[in-house]
Length: 333
Image (cartoon, rainbow, N blue to C red; front, side, top):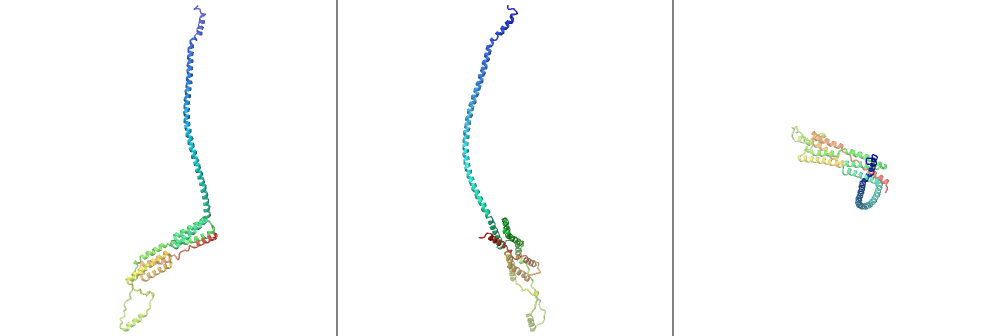
Protein backbone atom coordinates (compact mmCIF):
# COMPACT_ATOMS: atom_id res chain seq x y z
CA UNK A 1 0.00 0.00 0.00
CA UNK A 2 2.84 2.17 0.69
CA UNK A 3 4.38 1.42 -2.59
CA UNK A 4 1.26 2.17 -4.51
CA UNK A 5 2.12 4.70 -7.09
CA UNK A 6 -1.30 6.23 -6.95
CA UNK A 7 -1.03 7.07 -3.36
CA UNK A 8 2.25 8.92 -3.63
CA UNK A 9 0.79 12.11 -5.09
CA UNK A 10 -1.91 12.09 -2.54
CA UNK A 11 0.62 11.85 0.22
CA UNK A 12 2.49 14.76 -1.25
CA UNK A 13 -0.62 16.85 -1.41
CA UNK A 14 -1.37 16.04 2.17
CA UNK A 15 2.08 16.83 3.16
CA UNK A 16 1.76 20.21 1.39
CA UNK A 17 -1.51 20.92 3.08
CA UNK A 18 -0.13 20.17 6.49
CA UNK A 19 3.15 22.03 6.11
CA UNK A 20 1.74 25.51 6.93
CA UNK A 21 1.17 24.57 10.50
CA UNK A 22 4.82 25.18 11.43
CA UNK A 23 4.63 28.87 9.84
CA UNK A 24 2.31 30.23 12.51
CA UNK A 25 5.10 31.11 14.96
CA UNK A 26 6.96 32.94 12.14
CA UNK A 27 3.91 35.00 11.28
CA UNK A 28 3.30 35.93 14.87
CA UNK A 29 6.97 36.98 15.15
CA UNK A 30 6.71 39.16 12.13
CA UNK A 31 3.53 40.66 13.45
CA UNK A 32 5.15 41.37 16.76
CA UNK A 33 8.15 42.88 15.00
CA UNK A 34 5.91 45.07 12.88
CA UNK A 35 3.90 46.06 15.89
CA UNK A 36 7.12 46.93 17.74
CA UNK A 37 8.24 48.93 14.76
CA UNK A 38 4.95 50.78 14.77
CA UNK A 39 5.25 51.43 18.47
CA UNK A 40 8.82 52.56 17.99
CA UNK A 41 7.73 54.92 15.24
CA UNK A 42 4.91 56.16 17.43
CA UNK A 43 7.32 56.59 20.31
CA UNK A 44 9.72 58.40 18.04
CA UNK A 45 6.94 60.61 16.81
CA UNK A 46 5.76 61.19 20.34
CA UNK A 47 9.27 62.01 21.52
CA UNK A 48 9.77 64.28 18.50
CA UNK A 49 6.49 65.96 19.25
CA UNK A 50 7.42 66.33 22.88
CA UNK A 51 10.82 67.74 21.90
CA UNK A 52 9.19 70.08 19.41
CA UNK A 53 6.65 71.07 22.03
CA UNK A 54 9.40 71.74 24.56
CA UNK A 55 11.42 73.68 22.04
CA UNK A 56 8.30 75.55 20.96
CA UNK A 57 7.58 76.50 24.53
CA UNK A 58 11.15 77.56 25.03
CA UNK A 59 11.07 79.53 21.75
CA UNK A 60 7.74 80.96 22.77
CA UNK A 61 9.25 82.06 26.07
CA UNK A 62 12.16 83.61 24.22
CA UNK A 63 9.75 85.20 21.78
CA UNK A 64 7.70 86.52 24.65
CA UNK A 65 10.87 87.95 26.18
CA UNK A 66 11.87 89.53 22.93
CA UNK A 67 8.33 90.75 22.41
CA UNK A 68 8.41 92.33 25.83
CA UNK A 69 11.72 93.99 25.01
CA UNK A 70 10.29 95.15 21.70
CA UNK A 71 7.24 96.51 23.48
CA UNK A 72 9.49 98.40 25.89
CA UNK A 73 11.61 99.74 23.06
CA UNK A 74 8.45 100.61 21.17
CA UNK A 75 7.17 102.51 24.18
CA UNK A 76 10.46 104.37 24.53
CA UNK A 77 10.45 105.07 20.81
CA UNK A 78 6.92 106.40 21.00
CA UNK A 79 7.87 108.65 23.91
CA UNK A 80 10.92 109.82 21.99
CA UNK A 81 8.80 110.34 18.88
CA UNK A 82 6.31 112.36 20.87
CA UNK A 83 9.09 114.48 22.31
CA UNK A 84 10.61 114.96 18.87
CA UNK A 85 7.21 115.89 17.46
CA UNK A 86 6.84 118.42 20.23
CA UNK A 87 10.29 119.87 19.56
CA UNK A 88 9.58 119.80 15.83
CA UNK A 89 6.41 121.75 16.41
CA UNK A 90 8.34 124.29 18.46
CA UNK A 91 10.97 124.46 15.73
CA UNK A 92 8.30 124.99 13.09
CA UNK A 93 6.79 127.79 15.13
CA UNK A 94 10.22 129.39 15.49
CA UNK A 95 10.85 128.91 11.78
CA UNK A 96 7.54 130.51 10.91
CA UNK A 97 8.35 133.41 13.21
CA UNK A 98 11.80 133.73 11.65
CA UNK A 99 10.32 133.63 8.15
CA UNK A 100 7.93 136.37 9.10
CA UNK A 101 10.77 138.47 10.49
CA UNK A 102 12.87 137.85 7.38
CA UNK A 103 10.00 138.83 5.10
CA UNK A 104 9.45 141.97 7.13
CA UNK A 105 13.15 142.76 7.01
CA UNK A 106 13.26 142.18 3.26
CA UNK A 107 10.29 144.46 2.82
CA UNK A 108 11.94 147.17 4.90
CA UNK A 109 15.24 146.72 3.10
CA UNK A 110 13.55 146.83 -0.28
CA UNK A 111 11.72 149.95 0.74
CA UNK A 112 14.76 151.67 2.25
CA UNK A 113 17.36 150.35 -0.23
CA UNK A 114 17.02 153.42 -2.44
CA UNK A 115 17.36 155.78 0.52
CA UNK A 116 20.37 153.83 1.80
CA UNK A 117 22.16 153.91 -1.56
CA UNK A 118 21.62 157.65 -1.92
CA UNK A 119 22.88 158.32 1.61
CA UNK A 120 25.93 156.12 1.00
CA UNK A 121 26.65 157.97 -2.25
CA UNK A 122 26.47 161.32 -0.46
CA UNK A 123 28.88 160.05 2.21
CA UNK A 124 31.36 158.89 -0.42
CA UNK A 125 31.26 162.26 -2.18
CA UNK A 126 31.82 164.04 1.14
CA UNK A 127 34.79 161.76 1.90
CA UNK A 128 36.25 162.51 -1.53
CA UNK A 129 36.10 166.27 -0.87
CA UNK A 130 37.72 165.87 2.55
CA UNK A 131 40.52 163.65 1.25
CA UNK A 132 41.32 166.08 -1.55
CA UNK A 133 40.87 169.39 0.27
CA UNK A 134 42.24 168.53 3.70
CA UNK A 135 44.55 165.57 3.27
CA UNK A 136 45.73 166.42 -0.26
CA UNK A 137 45.23 162.76 -1.19
CA UNK A 138 43.95 162.66 -4.78
CA UNK A 139 44.25 158.88 -5.00
CA UNK A 140 41.83 158.17 -2.15
CA UNK A 141 39.52 160.94 -3.35
CA UNK A 142 39.45 159.37 -6.81
CA UNK A 143 38.58 155.96 -5.36
CA UNK A 144 35.73 157.52 -3.36
CA UNK A 145 34.33 159.20 -6.50
CA UNK A 146 34.44 155.93 -8.44
CA UNK A 147 32.71 154.08 -5.58
CA UNK A 148 29.97 156.75 -5.54
CA UNK A 149 29.47 156.31 -9.28
CA UNK A 150 29.10 152.53 -8.79
CA UNK A 151 26.49 153.13 -6.12
CA UNK A 152 24.42 155.29 -8.47
CA UNK A 153 24.81 152.72 -11.22
CA UNK A 154 23.52 150.04 -8.85
CA UNK A 155 20.56 152.27 -7.94
CA UNK A 156 19.51 152.43 -11.58
CA UNK A 157 17.36 155.56 -11.15
CA UNK A 158 17.43 157.82 -14.25
CA UNK A 159 16.60 160.80 -12.06
CA UNK A 160 20.19 160.78 -10.79
CA UNK A 161 21.75 160.65 -14.25
CA UNK A 162 22.91 164.33 -14.02
CA UNK A 163 24.93 163.39 -10.94
CA UNK A 164 26.66 160.58 -12.83
CA UNK A 165 27.41 163.01 -15.69
CA UNK A 166 29.08 165.42 -13.28
CA UNK A 167 30.93 162.55 -11.61
CA UNK A 168 32.36 161.51 -14.96
CA UNK A 169 33.93 164.96 -15.47
CA UNK A 170 35.19 165.14 -11.88
CA UNK A 171 36.79 161.71 -12.13
CA UNK A 172 38.60 162.70 -15.33
CA UNK A 173 39.85 165.97 -13.80
CA UNK A 174 41.01 164.26 -10.62
CA UNK A 175 42.74 161.49 -12.59
CA UNK A 176 44.65 164.12 -14.58
CA UNK A 177 45.56 165.90 -11.34
CA UNK A 178 46.84 162.64 -9.84
CA UNK A 179 49.06 162.01 -12.87
CA UNK A 180 51.02 165.19 -12.08
CA UNK A 181 52.91 163.27 -9.37
CA UNK A 182 52.97 166.06 -6.81
CA UNK A 183 54.90 163.91 -4.40
CA UNK A 184 57.62 163.43 -7.02
CA UNK A 185 57.84 167.18 -7.60
CA UNK A 186 58.01 167.82 -3.86
CA UNK A 187 60.72 165.21 -3.50
CA UNK A 188 62.83 166.89 -6.19
CA UNK A 189 62.46 170.25 -4.41
CA UNK A 190 63.66 168.63 -1.17
CA UNK A 191 66.63 167.09 -2.94
CA UNK A 192 67.48 170.46 -4.49
CA UNK A 193 67.36 172.09 -1.03
CA UNK A 194 69.78 169.46 0.19
CA UNK A 195 72.25 170.32 -2.60
CA UNK A 196 72.38 174.04 -1.86
CA UNK A 197 75.80 173.72 -0.23
CA UNK A 198 77.26 172.36 -3.48
CA UNK A 199 76.21 175.41 -5.54
CA UNK A 200 79.15 177.81 -6.12
CA UNK A 201 78.78 181.54 -5.66
CA UNK A 202 79.51 183.92 -8.49
CA UNK A 203 83.12 185.21 -8.50
CA UNK A 204 83.63 188.81 -7.41
CA UNK A 205 84.93 191.04 -10.21
CA UNK A 206 87.16 193.86 -9.03
CA UNK A 207 87.70 197.07 -11.05
CA UNK A 208 91.20 197.43 -12.43
CA UNK A 209 93.35 200.17 -10.98
CA UNK A 210 93.22 203.49 -12.86
CA UNK A 211 96.17 204.19 -15.15
CA UNK A 212 95.76 207.93 -14.90
CA UNK A 213 99.06 209.38 -13.78
CA UNK A 214 97.74 212.81 -13.22
CA UNK A 215 97.99 214.06 -9.72
CA UNK A 216 97.01 217.05 -7.83
CA UNK A 217 94.05 218.53 -6.16
CA UNK A 218 92.27 219.46 -9.38
CA UNK A 219 92.49 215.96 -10.70
CA UNK A 220 91.05 214.49 -7.52
CA UNK A 221 88.18 216.97 -7.61
CA UNK A 222 87.44 216.13 -11.24
CA UNK A 223 87.50 212.44 -10.52
CA UNK A 224 85.08 212.79 -7.65
CA UNK A 225 82.73 214.91 -9.77
CA UNK A 226 82.89 212.32 -12.60
CA UNK A 227 82.10 209.48 -10.19
CA UNK A 228 78.97 211.28 -9.01
CA UNK A 229 77.24 210.62 -12.32
CA UNK A 230 77.89 207.23 -13.95
CA UNK A 231 75.77 205.37 -16.46
CA UNK A 232 75.93 201.57 -16.37
CA UNK A 233 74.13 198.87 -18.28
CA UNK A 234 72.29 196.14 -16.30
CA UNK A 235 74.85 193.62 -17.38
CA UNK A 236 77.63 195.76 -15.97
CA UNK A 237 76.25 195.84 -12.44
CA UNK A 238 78.71 194.59 -9.92
CA UNK A 239 77.45 192.21 -7.26
CA UNK A 240 78.14 193.31 -3.72
CA UNK A 241 81.00 191.67 -1.97
CA UNK A 242 79.67 188.89 0.27
CA UNK A 243 81.31 188.20 3.56
CA UNK A 244 81.54 184.54 4.76
CA UNK A 245 78.73 184.99 7.25
CA UNK A 246 76.60 186.56 4.52
CA UNK A 247 77.20 183.54 2.31
CA UNK A 248 76.05 181.25 5.09
CA UNK A 249 72.80 183.16 5.59
CA UNK A 250 72.27 183.32 1.83
CA UNK A 251 72.53 179.54 1.53
CA UNK A 252 70.22 178.97 4.48
CA UNK A 253 67.64 181.42 3.16
CA UNK A 254 67.73 179.75 -0.24
CA UNK A 255 67.30 176.38 1.45
CA UNK A 256 64.32 177.69 3.44
CA UNK A 257 62.76 179.04 0.26
CA UNK A 258 63.00 175.63 -1.40
CA UNK A 259 61.57 173.83 1.62
CA UNK A 260 58.78 176.40 1.79
CA UNK A 261 58.03 175.78 -1.89
CA UNK A 262 57.93 172.03 -1.19
CA UNK A 263 55.47 172.49 1.67
CA UNK A 264 53.32 174.86 -0.37
CA UNK A 265 53.20 172.35 -3.21
CA UNK A 266 51.98 169.58 -0.91
CA UNK A 267 49.34 171.84 0.66
CA UNK A 268 48.14 173.34 -2.61
CA UNK A 269 49.23 176.90 -1.76
CA UNK A 270 50.05 177.94 -5.30
CA UNK A 271 50.68 181.60 -4.41
CA UNK A 272 53.38 180.79 -1.85
CA UNK A 273 54.81 178.14 -4.16
CA UNK A 274 55.25 180.57 -7.04
CA UNK A 275 56.68 183.35 -4.85
CA UNK A 276 59.29 181.09 -3.26
CA UNK A 277 60.34 179.47 -6.52
CA UNK A 278 60.69 182.76 -8.38
CA UNK A 279 62.68 184.24 -5.49
CA UNK A 280 64.94 181.17 -5.47
CA UNK A 281 65.47 181.50 -9.23
CA UNK A 282 66.39 185.19 -8.85
CA UNK A 283 68.89 184.43 -6.09
CA UNK A 284 70.48 181.70 -8.18
CA UNK A 285 70.95 184.12 -11.06
CA UNK A 286 72.15 187.05 -8.90
CA UNK A 287 74.46 185.42 -6.37
CA UNK A 288 75.53 182.09 -7.85
CA UNK A 289 77.77 181.17 -10.73
CA UNK A 290 75.40 180.71 -13.65
CA UNK A 291 78.16 179.07 -15.67
CA UNK A 292 78.34 176.18 -13.21
CA UNK A 293 76.62 172.96 -14.20
CA UNK A 294 75.08 172.48 -10.74
CA UNK A 295 73.56 175.96 -10.78
CA UNK A 296 72.20 175.46 -14.30
CA UNK A 297 70.66 172.10 -13.28
CA UNK A 298 69.04 173.65 -10.20
CA UNK A 299 67.61 176.51 -12.27
CA UNK A 300 66.24 174.08 -14.87
CA UNK A 301 64.54 171.99 -12.18
CA UNK A 302 62.90 175.06 -10.67
CA UNK A 303 61.64 176.22 -14.08
CA UNK A 304 60.28 172.74 -14.86
CA UNK A 305 58.45 172.62 -11.54
CA UNK A 306 56.93 176.05 -12.23
CA UNK A 307 55.65 174.82 -15.59
CA UNK A 308 54.28 171.45 -14.44
CA UNK A 309 52.74 172.46 -11.12
CA UNK A 310 48.93 172.38 -10.97
CA UNK A 311 47.19 175.70 -11.26
CA UNK A 312 44.65 174.71 -8.57
CA UNK A 313 42.85 171.71 -7.12
CA UNK A 314 40.01 170.34 -9.26
CA UNK A 315 36.53 171.20 -8.03
CA UNK A 316 34.58 168.05 -7.13
CA UNK A 317 31.74 169.69 -5.19
CA UNK A 318 29.23 170.01 -8.03
CA UNK A 319 28.17 166.35 -7.97
CA UNK A 320 27.37 166.39 -4.24
CA UNK A 321 25.36 169.61 -4.55
CA UNK A 322 23.38 168.22 -7.50
CA UNK A 323 22.74 164.96 -5.63
CA UNK A 324 21.32 166.81 -2.65
CA UNK A 325 19.17 169.03 -4.86
CA UNK A 326 17.66 166.04 -6.70
CA UNK A 327 17.10 164.16 -3.47
CA UNK A 328 15.31 167.17 -1.96
CA UNK A 329 13.14 167.53 -5.04
CA UNK A 330 12.16 163.85 -5.17
CA UNK A 331 11.77 163.45 -1.40
CA UNK A 332 10.48 166.73 -0.04
CA UNK A 333 10.48 167.02 3.77
